Image 1 (cartoon, one colour):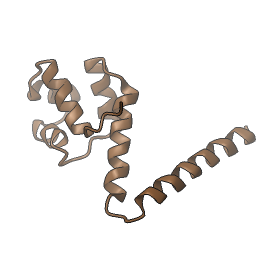
Image 2: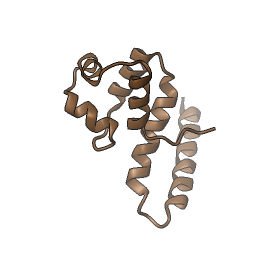
Image 3: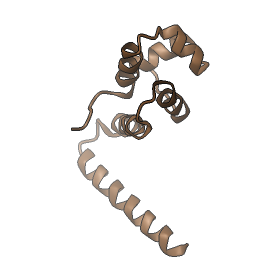
Amino acid sequence: MQNLDSIGTQIRKLREEAEMPLRKLAALLDIDQSTLSKIERDERRANTQIIEQIAKIFKADKEKLLVAFYSDVVMYEIQDESSFSEILQVAEAKIEYQRTTKKKTK
């Protein structure tokens, strides 16, 4: 089953399950506590570097965290569009086309 929690919620859950204070994780990530707090509350976006570091720190599945991260990025961009479903379908088709085209040129 898909995890529909935001990346911020997933980060907070990982941190709390490990009983790690926010200040300690922020220090490990070399970011301010306030920045990490905002990421956990979905008031600020993380980046892939932070996601990869978090996966290493908590020995979490990096791919699942990246899926949560990128799905949040897409969702925030198109959530207010009435044709969001069509946008996702066309984007998926474009990605498949790009992947097959690149394979043929290699």
